[in-house]
Structure formats: C-alpha cells, structure tokens
Amino acid sequence: MPTSVLRRAPGSPSLSRARVRKLGDAMLDALGTPGSELSVLLTNDEKIRALNHEHRGKNRPTDVLAFPQGEAVGGATPMLGDVVISLDTAERQARGRGRDLLEEVRLLLAHGLLHLVGHDHSEPTEARQMRRETRRLVAWTKKNTAQSSGGAKPRGALPRPRRAPRKHR
Image (cartoon, rainbow, N blue to C red; front, side, top):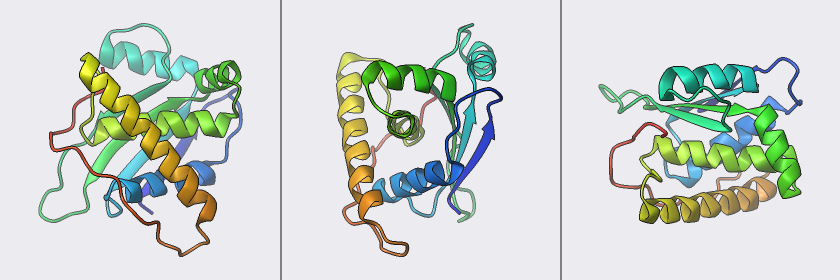
C-alpha cells in the first residue's frame, strides 16, 4: 500500500485510518506519483509540539509537519516522506471553519504532501501557488474518492513541481 497511516494520538478525536489511507493514495495518484510511498502520523498536540520544537525550534503545537525523505535510489519505489497531523489542532480548526474533521485532515494532508513534492510558501508568490495547488488537490480527491468504486483508476493527474523537495517551514 503506497500510504501507511499510524495513529499515536491518546485522547484525541477518532478518525478512521483507512479513510486517511484512501485520501493519501488518491493524492499520490493525483500528483502522478502512484508508485511512491507516503507515511502519515496522526497524533496529538503534545507530540506534534515536541516535533515542532525539535525540528523547527518552535515550542508550540502546529497543525501539520512534513518531512521529505528524498529521491529513489537504484530504481526503488521512492519514499516521499512523512506527514504528521495533529488531530487536536485539526479538530479545533474544523470547528472554526464549520466542517468535519475528515475534511480538515484532507486539507492538511494535501498541504503536507505538496511540501513533500517540492512546494513551499515562504514567499508571497509561492504562498499563493501553494494555496491554489492545495485547493486543486483537495477538490480532485473529493471528486475521485467519492466516485471511485474499488478498482477504478482516477483520471487527470495534477502536475508536479520541478524543484527538489524542501522541509516544511
């Protein structure tokens, strides 16, 4: 399975790992990387705060972190990297935006995955492009996961950026 989902979120809202895995697989297809591997960690604010502090020097929880793994070696299936999502923060944001938790996680997963394939948002132009690509990926997966019936292959992959992956800032 291209997307693996691990849950380490004691006390956090429940969310089906299978549904998140389906979203991840659809997003890999949408980006034209169906043979790639993606790891998703669903966690809580306490654990993501520790990761945010260790890797970004910010001692506070965040909604999503992305950790690229790099390019394939010797023809092996490329491991794109890890996306870490705080279910606590996602739930608060979902309530504030008037949507359910799965929809918020879909948005955060798209954002994190776009970082893994090279998108960034440190400059205003990049931020606009990242928001646009996130919206496109979310819309594409809504359409294709709602219509897919088991083995149906989604159509119309989204283009990949040309630059190398960067760490989430």
